[in-house]
Image (tube, rainbow, N blue to C red; front, side):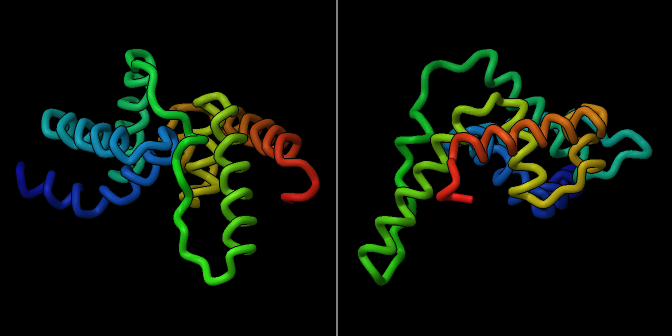
Length: 161
């Protein structure tokens, strides 16, 4: 049993952590929720007919929604400093401003829309895969993704697109 969990952890941890980090904007929260996800997997087994990756990400999403219901005020996504690895100061400033603008727009999305944007746009899952992870019909997911992208385009304005 421990060997199976260790294999899942090695195989899926980076995607689970990236997904949870994208939703929360906090490495600490992502670390805690990833740990909770894999601890919950100790007591459950993957149902037949489900891909392990989708099941693990679905579990991570469940942990995220439970966290949202019980969370206390945290640091805003706007307060997270962008990485500073640039050679030109002007370019670094423009990229930092752009990154901050994108983080502010993502923070204004609902948690459901943010999850869809990160799964499809950030992690590269298909709508069918994201549908299995989030437990939402594919057509609903598609329309929510369109609304989220329209909102981001409207918030970011013509200069960012």
